[in-house]
Image (cartoon, rainbow, N blue to C red; front, side, top):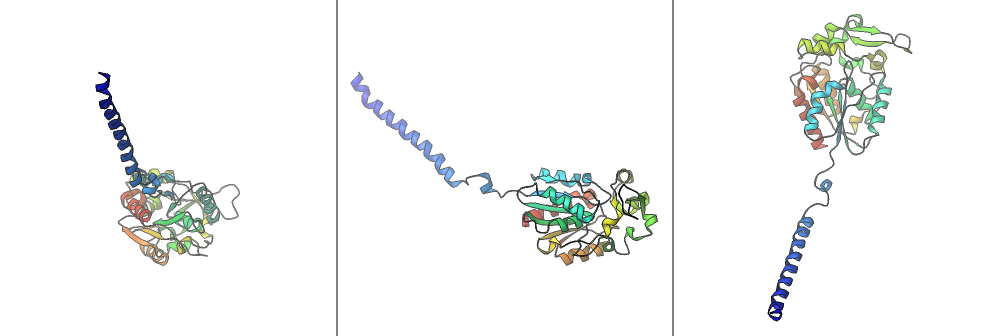
Length: 279
């Protein structure tokens, strides 16, 4: 009986060995056809950094932040101090230095002036996105860029509440928008009750910050996109267009006021993602 089983057992052993080798060969071939890592198949996603403007805070980006996160992007929304253009730029710059990998930098309103300064010379910043924002050239200050038709260009005593702060230089103060200006000019497109909540929690801009000269602009070396609010009363559309065209930005018009990032988050997000894909 043992002599009868020897040959079949040998053949069975050989068959098992062949099958085992085949099972090892198939994954090896598949592995050879695949990239070595996920990163080889998909480029590293940039971190999208959203910089808020004056009379606002990081929560103004909530709708956009949620959509970007749902799309799978890392998003950061650092607080903009609103104390001085050089100081605010330095603060955001220090924050950017903690991020490894590519960055898409987005600024709203006064935040546009900040990103214009902070991105200069930073090789990680691949794209700039301006949302109803200032895009100053070197030596320009923010205040004159709004033009004569802005709701900010009236009698300062009727536009702002002036609030002293410790260490303020002579004549300097924190500027808060008066409720009437905030509701009728700054937060257009929002329900009145929602606008009143934002007015109550607004963060002030130091008056001198809007009159400090901007440095060498990053938009001269980094591609930029611009979301232009066609009903903006803070930075009127013609002023936005002039700055965007000068910077060579890709312009996307939206039927919105100054807070398009809140009222039109889908459209703003779409522009940011376009910048991500083409930078």
